[in-house]
Image (cartoon, rainbow, N blue to C red; front, side, top):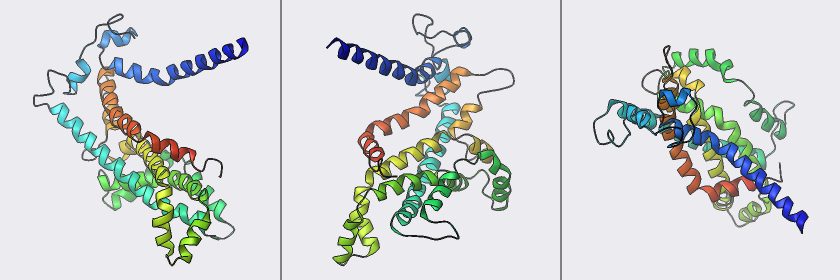
Length: 291
């Protein structure tokens, strides 16, 4: 009995320690948004004990209690960048899920030959695109986008982000489709349904959790992406990560502003994760055994 008791203490202690490590960056960001320059440089951590909270970061963003109901240029700029980020990330994620699901379904249900490559090789080829550093694509993308007049446009960012997260969707959804017995679709075909009919009526409802999980993962990756956004955008399609980096100047770093913007960035993703938690868990668990 004592052995089990000590084991539980150790397990829960490790879990609490890991929870602290995971949540500390969020805590640090939240507290930094209420600090002043002195509090940041001196490393104060605990509000009302180490330092007195200040609305400086949120006031500079136009989101403090004293400025939220007044006209504010910084707030208009923030909401403009927020809208850009939402439109680009949501559109790219939805497009990637749509295209990636079709590709994954084909790789799961049909046999392809492309020279010496077969289905597993093609799947690995898609996944291997994630290994390629984004900086390698910088010059080709800039030249191509300049010729197509896509620099600093939302549609350009959507297409680029779609290509970036597409391999992840294909890999996730391929496992989702592999976990579904093909006999279900064969039964639908025997009943007179077409291939697309069987896909929409039989397969699609089953893989909804996987689709949601893939969408959320793509949304997070697109939402937080900085390098490509800084490379392609300059005025009209600037996203929130670029706005965060813009708080760094040659004279100083406005840590409180960066923390306030970062905190405001995290809120929508946290809400989405809480609302869609059951779909995320089901999507990650389904097809985990079959690879």
